[in-house]
Amino acid sequence: MTSQYEPLIQQAIAIVKAGNLPAARALLSKVVMQDPGNARAWYLLSQVVENNEQAIYCLKRVLIIQPDNQLALANEITRRTLSLYEERLKGESSQIITGINFQRAIDLIRNGRQQRVYEIIKLLQSTRPNASIVN
Image 1 (cartoon, rainbow, N blue to C red):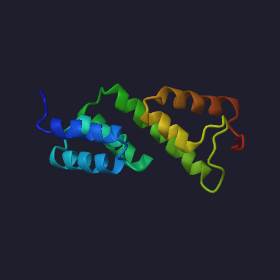
Image 2 (image 1 turned 90 degrees about the vertical axis):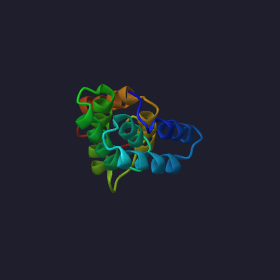
Image 3 (image 1 turned 45 degrees about the horizontal axis):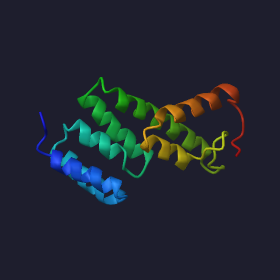
Image 4 (image 1 turned 180 degrees about the horizontal axis):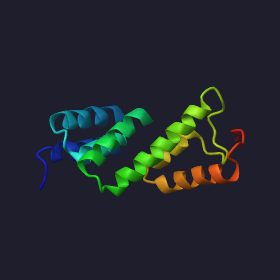
């Protein structure tokens, strides 16, 4: 069944493609306020919010609505992991050992490359768990 908010969701997608994340964020926020059970809107909102904490909140909402949503689950796990690393990096260099910086990791997530970020984090954990953060 197509949601009555589908036209707004499509408009938000077009706005994202045009590069206006704040406008897309505002539009998707409006949709989830009016239709809090709209998993698609929550997922899309998770991709345009300003920080990981907000993204995790949105992804948790998706998983409440659709517990078997594997894409939301993968994103939520990846963002939680990145948030943990972000906490560890506060006051230090913002670069992860492989030369990928935190913003680049977020860009990879937004572009559907969560698996690559996960691989980098696993490599970091397995090869040098106590290493200092360097470029």
